[in-house]
Image (cartoon, rainbow, N blue to C red; front, side, top):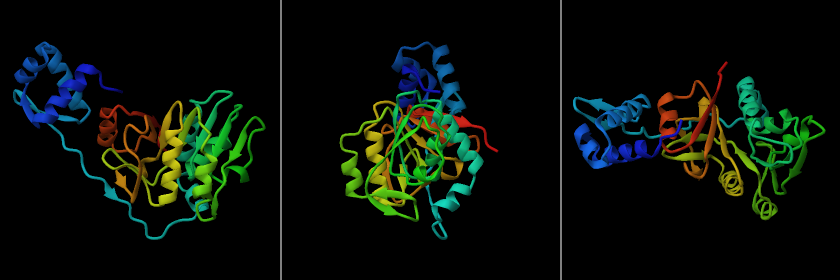
Length: 261
């Protein structure tokens, strides 16, 4: 759900004043009282504002919580965690693809499932080495980027990876992350991975998609590679905090929800 022009205007006025009377919004926008009330009700349903007697106030966005990791897991451990949920996110991602597409796929366990589950004539351009060690449909083509191999994360990164991406543009890009929040954006704990992810999003001519299950949303990690606006779509699951989903919607990000287990 995306806010329309008048809804954005009302929300911006409330943000600027922090709180204001409904009659003031009527006067500043030249909208009818009924229209302003309808918009305020919608914004309240989205948890963006709180209705007051005769007025309204903005809801503050909570700061991201840091990612806590006792010890970093190897790729195979990550792949097996919440695997059915990751498969649902990957399956929903495939609905955007058509025969003839060229698609950037980032490192990460959820991202690696997209080529594995694809049955269309699609070229996947990726630094995710798990893709080429998996069984793929004969229609699928994989173009591996070059770079320094990281066995722990089953990925390639570094200057050679960036160089191999220089003249490659995608129809869509699907990028994973360590954490995702409306304030801090999409973040990772690996700097080089962040640079690759940022480039993949920048080189997409179509959808710029962040794929992340509920365990990653509402958190923040060390290196930001994309702010809201650098991506236009999030695919996640129903266990994701509804308040945060609504905050992304306010930022004109399409949030697609798959069923949780």
